[in-house]
Amino acid sequence: MVADGLPHRLITLDGLSQWCALNAFTVEEIGADEVFLTDQTTGSAWSLFRVEDWLQLKGLVLEDVEPELPMCLTLARLHDRLLGCRFSIDQQHGVVIVADFARAAQSMEAIGETLMQMQSIIDQTVGLLEDVVESDVAADEFAIDRAFGVTGSLRVH
Image (tube, rainbow, N blue to C red):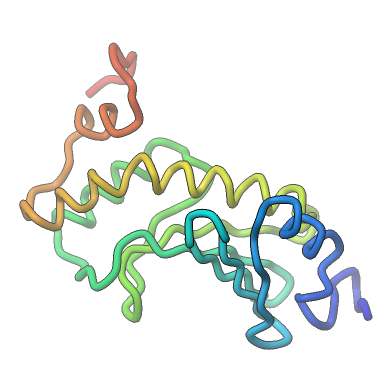
């Protein structure tokens, strides 16, 4: 059932079950406003949930991370890269990656493409973020360039 263009239960989002089947994800309904997606190949897990008229997609990057200054500086530098999503420090879980979907962008095609992009960003940055936690030193722009495989960047550092 749909009200104002949004399904009453998120599990019934148009195209969700088909996308999950095509991309080897399982989907579990947590509640009417939340589903949990798990990549059967990699084990990565994602929460897709409703926040009023918006949908939010969240994935865990690193567990048990405190919001220390080096991590906050590194995340701010990553945000400057205009990645299409953002990192956050979730008090319950640690470092997470988040994307928001306005009503016009709530197609499963858009959500699926964003999820795959976010997974790629995690794959490229998790080592960098682990180094920040271990060394307690913020990553500089050059380290971030290396994490993304960028050499000879035209960015002003």
